[in-house]
Length: 368
Image (cartoon, rainbow, N blue to C red; front, side):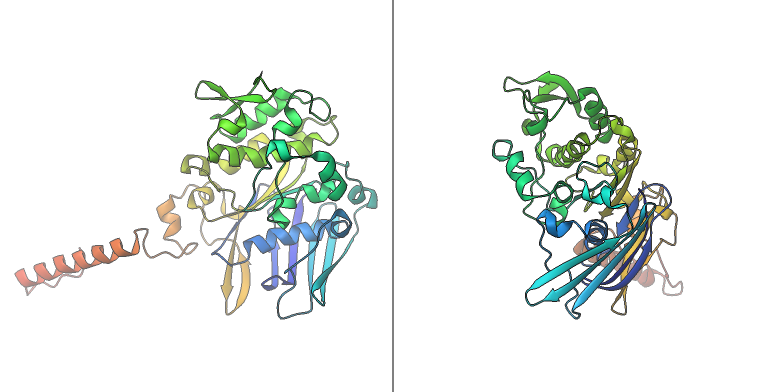
């Protein structure tokens, strides 16, 4: 499955919006805070899973535009079209989904078809000792579990140790395949090894030391945490298809979250190399992420005259430096300096100009 075209009407703060997905590669959503980036990726969840969300344990809230009684999202994919209608009834929102996908694809949790995973900006990993898969499976459908952190801020991700520790895995875990994905997705800085700690947890090779995930820094744990959750859900599907060949859609809000600039430069390419059959749809505020993709993979969300618009950049983004991007129309910054430093710089320039004017009144100074 690959996403092709999305239409939002009266969804959250978006009155009306249409956007087209690139034929290949990721889609990177760029825009100011409050522009609607998170609304777009949330709308994708509702359009694809609208029919099963209510029965999976999800309750819609604050998704219908405040000025209207109902909302609609239509998503065209290579496998069919998904439509969801949301209506406000009293203090509740009713979700009604319809699509022309083969029914068995959507209603079968174990089916690899229509695979969708989503990760919100507040994503966090559940504490290993408190995670109980039986309790979660009884209360939440697996399709909802895959997008839970995107739709519900309190929803925690599946901890790596809960399905890879000795005696806890659901079926055999291909450690070599997991290791290859982790290594590519972290640009080789962290490597999963087959070695285990005394309590059975897999160890990572980090700068020559063998450490469990809980011993890595917050930044590494955050990035590896959502990636481990994604691999868990892929692991639950048919083992006949190699991990790298499993297809689907992955939504990530703030893909650069907790990442050092060195990782931000290559995060999307690293993910594409690790899972080449996946279509990634991400949001970002990072010029380093933006400089790693071509303009056809970027969608700029901007409010004009009170309405949200979506458009491709007017410049080629790939290869541009952070300063070039920040000072372009994409970010609309006048300077990359702090405001106070910029004021001092401009004052110093003006003082120099005045000195030159005083020294040579007959030779006006236009610039330095």
